[in-house]
Length: 172
Ligand code: B12
Image (cartoon, rainbow, N blue to C red):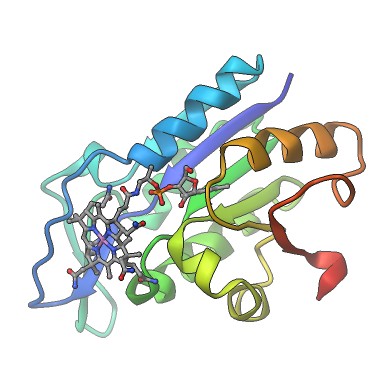
């Protein structure tokens, strides 16, 4: 049995840009359901839902994140997580995803970091080249791929027999 933490990062916008962001992270709910169905432990950190009113300006004052800060997210990750999954849905949020992913890898260097979502599906090579903290990219709908990946990592053979993984470190 593996212990998985899934993360929806905060919404990240230009300072004065407004987007409708307070929606449930349905994609991660689907993933959590199947991960549990296969007998694994799974928790979800919904950075937006867990701090709806919190706004944080970037150091240069140009961007605003809505929800938990990256540091608060890292604090909430299970200390004994075997796998950390991060949803990267919006290309405009990539600069912040990168910072979050780097903080996660710094704190959990030995834990596999898996990314998925629309941005990753569209730009897997770009994302892995820009961010060395990603171990695996999952393309498209992630449910079956994620449980296959968990099994692969448990068996220390994550590179074979899994359809839907874009790249891994071996492919860099
Ligand atoms: C509903 C929707 C919204 C809703 C709510 C989204 C939400 N739930 O959070 C609202 C209206 C809020 C919205 C807003 C925006 N949206 Co929108 N949205 C969608 C839409 C139509 C469906 C998303 C969805 O809920 N899918 C269903 C769920 C179940 O699937 P999912 O989230 O994709 O998750 C699955 C996989 O992606 C994957 N997965 C996801 N996360 C992870 C994580 C891991 C670790 C793994 C392994 C797998 C994985 O597995 C999941 C299960 O199969 C998509 C288009 C589409 N058809 O996908 C656009 C889309 C995601 N939106 C898009 C955009 C651009 C925006 C806005 C920027 C628009 C704007 N200018 O304001 C804003 C940004 C909001 C923000 N954060 O600031 C683009 C993103 C493109 C990109 N590369 O950036 C899309 C792809 C539409 C498009 N083709 O242009 N959006």
